[in-house]
Image 1 (cartoon, rainbow, N blue to C red):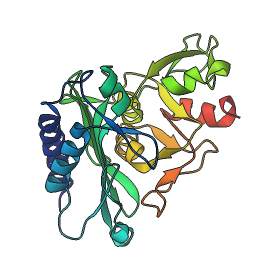
Image 2: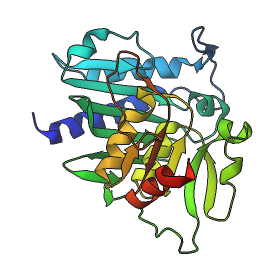
Image 3: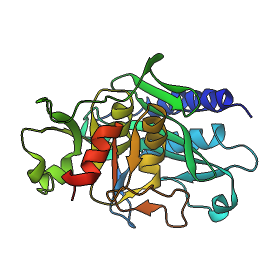
Image 4: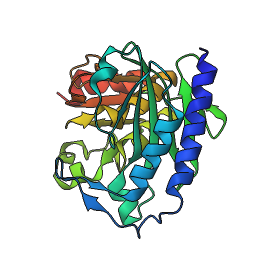
Length: 260
């Protein structure tokens, strides 16, 4: 199967999921709270999940989604689709245009292709390790700022982490910390060269980051854990503790000292 076929499927999935979400108005949608994690979910999340599951996995391919019951058959699959039908549901509910549809494809546990679409801003980021990354059809890549040249590194940060004070130590001249909602959207913006970096020091689920990890790497960037090690994907418990995503120099500076 060609990678172009995978990218075509991802693009189809992103567009179809956006159409499934369209009837629900961001900022005016009803929601309920999931008992297991106390996270909100809307009918739009579930509608997008259903569409994506119909379009993406073919025979023999695994599936992992925030809004589907986890089928551990995926652990035996070489190819696994990992999706978040709406990443940033809280922002979607609040009418903040920082949410997206996220699709990632793993092969042998490696993120090889992904797509992120923010219908609110009409930003569609698509790519693979073989083809690179495009933003709305135009080729793009991660930024590679020169560390210490006097220009601050722009870092996208979780609003809730900022509120909890976890970013206080990064509020200095070398950083321009920008609050942003969806984890996947932040990764997509880094891959598209619209921000220098994003990182988090708290745990995230695989569906938050597989698509974005594929995009950042395809755009020439680096994604790793806080200690510099490579994250593992398609795990039985699909959660890992933290991550750093940026161009090579910024990622290495973060791991080598900033996050110490």
